[in-house]
Each structure stands twice: as C-alpha cells, then as structure tokens.
Amino acid sequence: MKSRLLDLLSKPGVLIADGATGTFLQQAGLPRGTAPERWNLENPEAILSLHRSYLDAGSQLILTNSFGGNRYRLSRHGLAEQAHEINRTAAQLARQAAGTTAWVLGDIGPLGELLAPLGTVAYEDAVAAFSEQAAALVEGGVDGILIETMSDLGEVKAAVEGVRCVTDLPVLVTMSFDTHGRTMMGVTPAQAAHELWGLGVNVIGANCGRSLPENLEAIRAMREAEPQAVLMAKPNAGLPHTEGDTLRYDVTPEIMADYALRFVALGVKIFGGCCGSTPEHIRAVVRALRG
Ligand SMILES: [Zn+2]
Image (tube, rainbow, N blue to C red):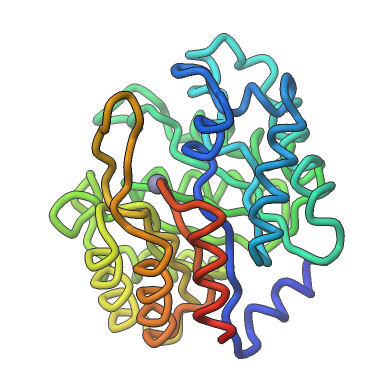
C-alpha cells in the first residue's frame, strides 16, 4: 500500500479528500465538550457512518477520527492512558469503511500545548507524544499520516520526527494560515513551504484557515515558493456564526466546488474541506472536478 499511495501522488490527476469531522459528529449528537475521539471506542457506528458518508460522496482519501488523539489533548478528558487504543481504533474504523478502494490518512493535530521556550512541553516529549500516536495509527492500518492545522514550525518538526521514528509511510503536512495570512505563530505560507518541503515530507499545504480566498492565496504563495512541491488544500467552509444554538457556515457546496477548480488550477494534488464542510460539499466538489 505504501508505494501505491506514493505512486498515486506522483501521477497526474486530483485526489479528493473528505470534509469536516468535528462539525459532522456534533450534528450526529456528540455532546458539547466531549472529545470526538472518545466515540472511536464508545460509538464506533457513528464513526463508520461519518466515513461512509464521505466515501459515498466520492472521497478517495479519508482521515481517521484522531485529530486530538495525542496524549496531551486526551489528558484533558482523562483519556491519556487510552491514547494507543483510541488511535488504533480510529485507524481500524476508517480502514473498515474504506476497504481497499479508498485511502486512509492517520490524522494528527497539534498537541494543544506550546513547546518550550514559549510553553512548557520539551521538544523530546513532543516527539514522543507524536510518535506514540503515529505508531497506533500505523498499527490500525493507515496508508499515510497527515499532520494538520499546525501553527508552529518547531512543533511540525517534532511531529515529523515522531512519525518518522515509527514508519516509512507517506507523510503529509498542512498548516492553518488563520491570522492575517500567517499562522497563529506568525509563519508565512512561503516560509512554511520552504521549511516543510525541506523536511522531506511527501505533501505540504494549507488547511482550515479563515476563508476560501485566504486559503487560495496561501496555496498560491506556497506554489511560488516551492514550485516542485506536491500540494494539498483542505480549507474550511468559512468562519461559523451562531444562529440560535447552531453554528452556521456561509460557504455553500456550490461555492466550495467553484473554489476547488481554482485550487486545482494552482496545481493542488489533494483537495478536501475542513470545518463546516459536509458530504454535500464533497459531492459538489467531485461533480465539479470530475465533470
Ligand atoms: Zn478546520
């Protein structure tokens, strides 16, 4: 499988990823404040249904439900000791839904704590936490690892190192440029492109962020900075606003599909949606790209 995903990345054609996990699970009844990863163990049917909804919509590549599955984030929910089981199960559920016809990326998000010297987490401890998560995802049967929504280049390095300790599978890294065109830690898209591609990972790009136009600008800047890089974009469906007690996102499936064409025109190899994007958004993207 490893070489097959790498092969696919080097061939022409766009791969369509999935949409949001968190907002999907909230709509499926995940109580506010509950770690989505808890449902890997306690409500696996909901996770299978999440994956199947995106696969039915045409996603060729789905993410495991493990964004917050590192020991630091899980500890806030009293789940740190179950980190291995939670991540392995996340991978097994995605694999079960995808079978051999779609690809599974083990999803790794930020630690949720700042690294020293700004924060308290030592670099080696960050590497160990990412390594623990990646090992469990690999054991559960993923085809590659996606490190996403990153803001800090130091944390990205720790994550890549942690993943590389345990597997040779493809590694994809995307950062969130949500603060005036930079990441929260001030990293520009051009700087990110140089540093991430310099780490020797297989795919780099942007995810989440604030809006489709800002994500498009980030990808354009990454493309200019590293013309050879294989790019991935997984923008959100705009920023949410509340209507009553529900969150609403302004980007419709049609708008998302229109933007998918613009991202692909910039040479993006993998396109999907982040927060607020639904199976309907992915279905519209598939229609636009496969026409
Ligand atoms: Zn997002």
